[in-house]
Amino acid sequence: MVQNTAKLGGTASGITVAKIAQGLMMMTLRDPKHPLSDEEAFESIKAGVDACPPGAKMFLNSGEFYSYDFSTANLQLLARFFEKYPDYADKTFLSVKGAIGKSVGKPGGPDTSPENLRRSVDTINGALRGTKKLDLFECARVDQKYPIEDTIKALAALVQEGKFSHIGMSECKAETLRRAHAVHPIAVVEIEVSLWSYEEETKKGEIELGVAVAGYSPLGRGFLTGSIKSTSDLSDGDYRRMLTRFKDEYIKENIAIVEELKALAVKRNITPAQLAIAWVASLGDHVIPLPGSSSKKRTLENLAAGDIVLTDADKAQIDKILSSHQVKGDRYFGNDAAAHLWG
Image (tube, rainbow, N blue to C red; front, side, top):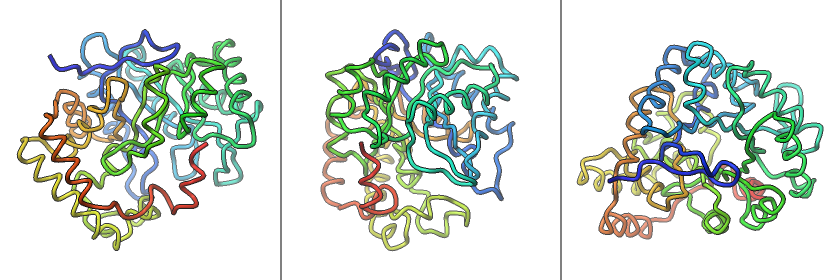
């Protein structure tokens, strides 16, 4: 039988979730000229929850700042969803990133001061309007201005107040995770994991601590699906235009990887997206692929990848493809910027 569920870690170790999670960022962080209707968004979320294995919750991932104006639009959308479908609140596990400093009209860097942690959590809960309990809160990035021990102590105090239930982390080094976990059990660490982003730092620490890994962008922000062949495939307002891997000169280099992966997907009678997600899922029972989805069709396609078992031959072929090509471009905006994402 295919193992299409996963267990979370830390204080959430008793919670079972679907093996494939759903990221909600692109429902609101999208080209303002092409907004997503509530009807489309709700249909996508509802389809994922309905497709969960019996006894498993759908892991939903949101953010305090997931919109072009860095507002709580994503959380407000969720509040409207749970108002319309109140029975779905208990069928989901909601993880939300926050603790980013703000200035007028734009975000600042990480700010895990006790005051901003409380502000962030209260803002999230306020946007949800009591429609859904905040299951897990995670600082979007590690704030180098404060020892991680102090940050986790402050979050643990907010847990004690009943403001949310579990603590997660995002884009952290294994050493930082260990230090944090020593203060309070960490349930989930969110790190980018995909066929073109599997850095050594993501491989250490989680298994020995029993922490689940939510592997975001398993589809390489859509590139690994084969649907993006040039910047002309991205709308003018698409934020991916700012990322180095989505510059035309790098797309031309990286497309060779995608073409070879597509050939393997055809051989397996699955989509390239499902191949990419199944590969991330195969990395361990503790790894939960976290693809973003804004449509019912895409959500169900992603979830179906949880039932795909890659053979040793499949994995060997994938390893050969990856070793034959060097991924061009950086995860974000350049080497210097990417280096600051880890803490």
